Length: 372
Image (cartoon, rainbow, N blue to C red; front, side, top):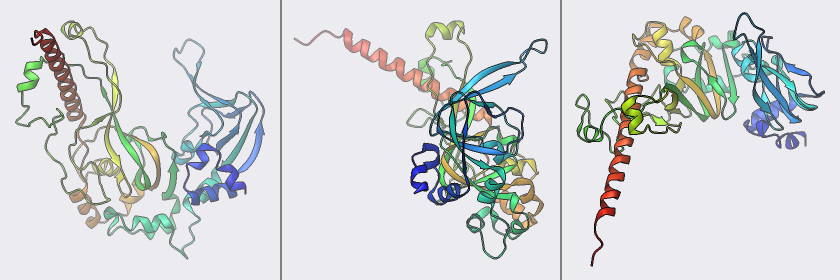
């Protein structure tokens, strides 16, 4: 009965059924008076929350000028059905913001000890945890001693990230590998916004480095890994043309001529990860000298995903020569930032060319005399 009632909380209902049951058995309820601080910026993360009723305000305090008092800025508002506080527990980092009750709030709370028990189990070696079993089905763990995780269960855990959560902000500053168990997530890259820089006729005729434009106008480049494995991906299957997820307003011809437009940034989707796909391997291999390719800083954003998190340092400490050689053969790097920026420029130039061509065609048709 209690579980059925909790399923009306949007963020709670996003969790898979087996995790909902665990949450319902471990969460505790309490009321928070208006204006009371729930979590404080800089403090150790001990609890995460589901907001049942009321409204809470999230602020960040920054020292923008060392000679002045710190300034607080409202960055978010939480309402009934939202949850907050779990990512700092997952990554074992201090609170990044302060969250205070704007009105009287009722919350469900999970403390960090119950959180770790829920997502990492308790180290009992009499049975095989579901996420350990799942790891045995992933090719990059072939030959790696998964039994070591029974002795150090804190080095591997399973967690569900709700849709829209930023799981990793900077892939070059993350201590975990993320293996998708269920759901999906996006690999995102921030780039400089591209404005059309070349005339339409040149776009129509040009080939860059002997590579032809794809039918949609994007330069697809050489393939990195054409051996797309069913249900398995260690990095992008090819130098695929990125998916542009932020709308871009094209510059006018006057802007292009005078270069008066302001430089902005956009976010592109570099990859979509599905069950058994892995994020972080190419970065780990570069960091440990297995490959000599420098990887760009990427972000990982959930679309509603349950991930197994495996500590990179622990994995490398127990990786044999066979495992390292296998990684060298199967891991495919992500495109460099310069390559992604080039693809974005090509895409923008092509779109501008299509717009000009269409506009010119319509004007030409409009000038034709009507048939007698």
